[in-house]
Image 1: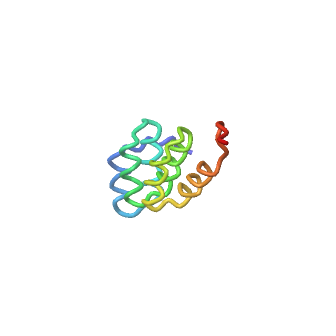
Image 2: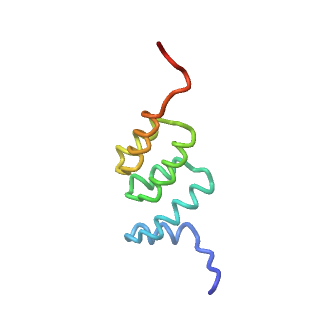
Image 3: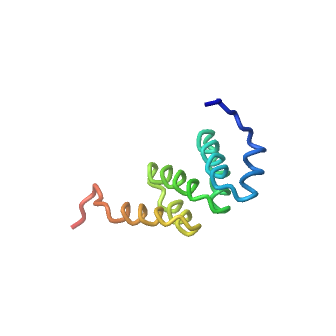
Length: 95
């Protein structure tokens, strides 16, 4: 199998034509670069893979607002993760 190094411009063109695999590849590249802004744009374009990657990042940092935003943008698993974090017991006990 040949090792193909596809450039972002080609991936963007393919994604714009509706190729979901190219859209997912762009999300992977944005995630590797730590470009949360691009991931958010890709989610807005309908990339559920970008939603997954954003959810993973937000859950790791406990960013409840970001999880809500991702859920509102259409990635339902972010809402599930938000609910899980909200229902988790806290370290502080109140009387």
